[in-house]
Length: 264
Image 1 (tube, rainbow, N blue to C red):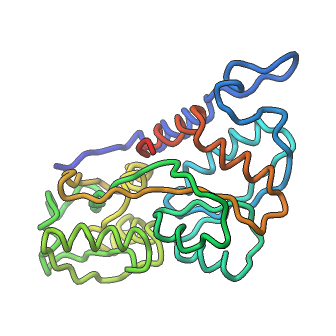
Image 2: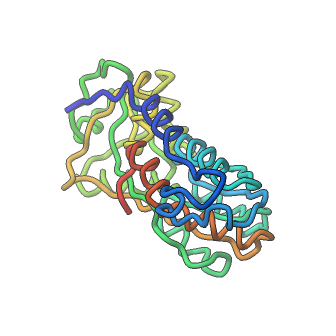
């Protein structure tokens, strides 16, 4: 069954920017106390956060909120497929924190990270060209050889989740391309270069004015977990730890869940 989320992207950004911020002046506001984000006591720094491509929109909004409530801190995000981020960490790229779209990738970096914490979950949907002209209603439709289907590459978390979803239903798909991250899959569908692709629910929601999304029943779906961790090589360890901790606070969780992410 196809559902449309055309107002989702605007609603997410609006909600994010309306999240109450810590007040300046005497004492801390209730929101600062509730957030557990340390308020003005958190150290200021220039932080670089490596984050999964599917977090692009929501982390830009969350980062703006964090900076306003933590004067002196500025965050630069680097978004890519989780496997690419892992390669950057192993190669010693200067960064302070890492958020991947699966626990497998994070677990492979134990020597380089602090203890990870899952901050959100996600689920897969079928993204189709706007209006769903090919009338794709369920997973088995993707096996139609007349369809142009695009998937994330198998080494990418979204690609692994997609493979598990399709294999469990014994559906054979010969993709017209395999993209380096889930945003690449979404882009192919948006541009009409593919009829459909498997993406995260949040990606489809963020592009609801360009694609339609077909739900995948829970019994056939895969749930993606997003762990966050500091990097041991960070030169801003305290500030990085403060940001990672903030991602689990009510303020940050509201932003994530308003964007369609599930509770950790």
